[in-house]
Length: 325
Image (cartoon, rainbow, N blue to C red; front, side):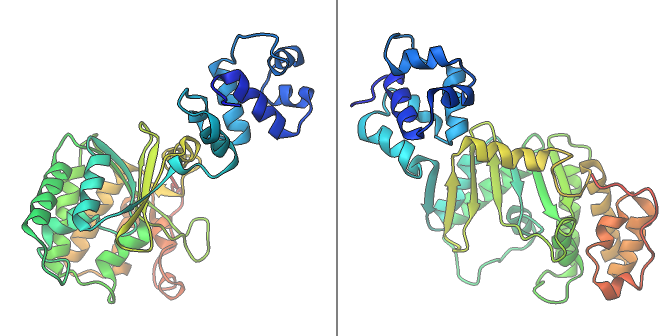
């Protein structure tokens, strides 16, 4: 069978389900008579979009199985194998990876960053990142990316863990920024995100649900195009996902006040950036910075959670009336 129309595809899906007509009909919210008319080819009126979407949702099929071009062996593979169209490996050099990111995040971006600050903010303050030299083409592309990110009207939503920003400011190991570089980066981010509704900065507590914290990697979500990509453990490889359900679920997780990890409201995040900048400027340590955050904001508890057990004994308890979103 060539599976050139929706009825033929419907029949094949029904056969492979091993369900009774009544059970199958109930799963797709149709009556038994309608389903029987398709199975017995009594009607040539094809299933509508709602039914097709319900089948894909119920049996976790990609939505492109209903397209005219998806027929024959390709259709069978689409309902029996992991859909290759939904997963793509981007294995490029630095130039290729950066170009890919710029194309995917051309007009807007929604990202979960693995560490603070994001690479382009870092590169704007730190002249040399890699130990090896880079080509002129790469440097030109990096400057183009930085210019894109620094535009006032560029739409960006960025999530950083509180742990990563405290590490950036106060860690004694694995931290190669000078004091001046830290201040410059914090000032840049403050100026970009303060009173700019095109840009939203969220600080989340990675210890709010797991005792030893939640590890993250760079994830970029484009819910409009139904695509996300993330960095693999191999530096040169990105993994692109075009699974509509997964993309929407990931986006909802970080955009829903109920589902998202405990976090600082984007309006207050900018205020905390300024507090940390002042702490560094005047040589205050992490304990003093926490005390200021606890005193001047409603998010002291989230920062308290990120202090070691020993440090928690040296600071004040979070004040009452704390917020978690």
